[in-house]
Every structure is written in structure tokens, then in C-alpha cells.
Image (tube, rainbow, N blue to C red):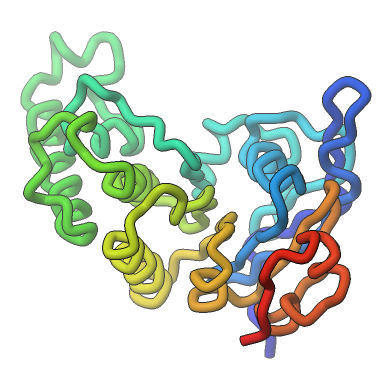
Length: 260
């Protein structure tokens, strides 16, 4: 029996002025999978991510999260529903420590309510301590605990990507959209990032949808794989099946897409 779908995108359309960036995009992300979204630059992958995650309003089509229609929902509402995303260029709070960058992503705390700082200081302190402990546990899993008190700006590009992943974990997300986790990352840290994604999927049951240009990484991690070009999904299947599709080779304009 095939697993149910965590995410279903049907006929998604997004226009910017006279430009159609998404032209009826449809694909599914099975529950518990690491699903890949590939395609040449300008294919519409990042626009699809932004539209699914509520940063753009769709001009047509629908998005369902575990059967619930989330089309047009705000990023905040999707965050509460268990969907989180990262960015190709990590967006961290540079003046905060690494641990604090994780702590701000947790669900609302008592101290965020206006009267609480005056009337619930004990409860706030206990919640803060528990939140710090939780952030440290996540950093341990990401091999970043030694950087907990360092400013986020002190990290390498790959480590910043891991911090963004950590924030998604702190939110309690069960579906995480990863935007080019390999971009600008050295090969050693890339192996660590790939192993972390696989471990979180295997041990925690987190479902991932990732955009990636490193096709070897996609082949290693992802099943299924969807390929986009010119705002449409042109092929879906295993990485081997997608690589062998002549429309994919044509979309990549002769780039090296060797069978595996």
C-alpha cells in the first residue's frame, strides 16, 4: 500500500504581471518521504516553494496539507499547522546567538503576553529554561552545540543552513521545505547536512521537500523526484527515471544528466 500524501499541489498558477511563473504545477509529497524538486534555473522551483509556504498568493490551483486545504494560508498559519521552510540564503538574526536563533522559532510562550512579565515571572523563567534546554538538544543533534553562545554571524554558510533547519525543528514542523541545502556548502559539511536530513527522516519521521541542483545528492536522498521547467512539472519518478526522460535532458540544454 502506498503511503498517504503529506502535501498535494494541484494546478498551481502564479503570475507576476504578464509573466506566468507557475503554469499548472501539480505534484505530491508522500508522507514520510524525502521528495526532490529539480530543474534548471528559472524553472519556477523557488516560486513554487514560496507559494506553497504562503509567501506568494496563488492565482489558481490548490495546495493541501494532509488533506486540509491550505491554499492562500499565511506563513504563520502554516507554521502552526506543522509546515516550515528554509531559504537558499539563510535568514538568521545576526545579533542573536545561535541558541537564541532557535529559541525564537518555538511556539508562543507565556512571556509573549503583555501582562505576563509583571504577574508570571516564575512561569516565564521556567519556560525559558526549558526552551533553552530544548534548543541545546536540537543543536546537539545538528553538531552545533559548541557554537550555542556564538553570534549567528560567526558561522559558516553551511552551519547557518543547519541553524535554519534547527529552527524548523524547534517549531515542531513535520513537513519541512528545504531550499537548496547544498548551495555554497563545502563537501565535508554537505555530507553532514545530507546525513542529518536522512536521520531526521528515518528517526523522527519528518517529511522533506527539497529543491536542489546537486543531482548526486538528490539521487542519494530523494524518492520521488519531480522535475520542473518553464513553470511546469515535466517528469516525476525515481531519480533514474527522471534522468532518463528525454524532456528532462532537453530542459537542461545538454547539461550532464548521466544515468545512475
